[in-house]
Length: 105
Image (cartoon, rainbow, N blue to C red; front, top):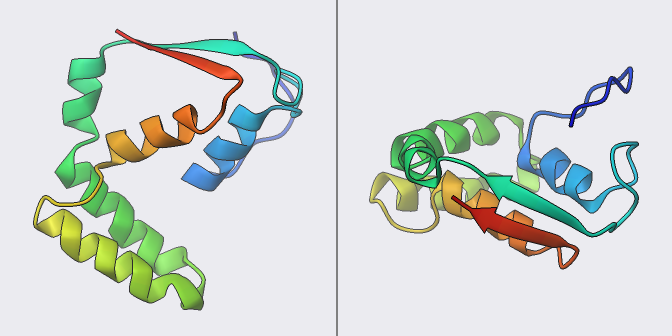
């Protein structure tokens, strides 16, 4: 379900995490919800190493100066296909919310 809230959220994983927590007009703060992720196989490929590297390059341009070395380290790992992919990062964010039941299809 989508609702026209008259405002938009940020375009980053921190904003995604905030919206999952709730309280922004779609669902209440920590209201139990079920999230059904369709096309897991395709999304796992599409959010794999190439997209992770693009994401980290973008994050490097906008992150706080105190985080630059952390992002650079993550970027170097991603270039070696080590660490977490963007798909894995998103799944971890979702699973960090005890009020969300995640179903991967």
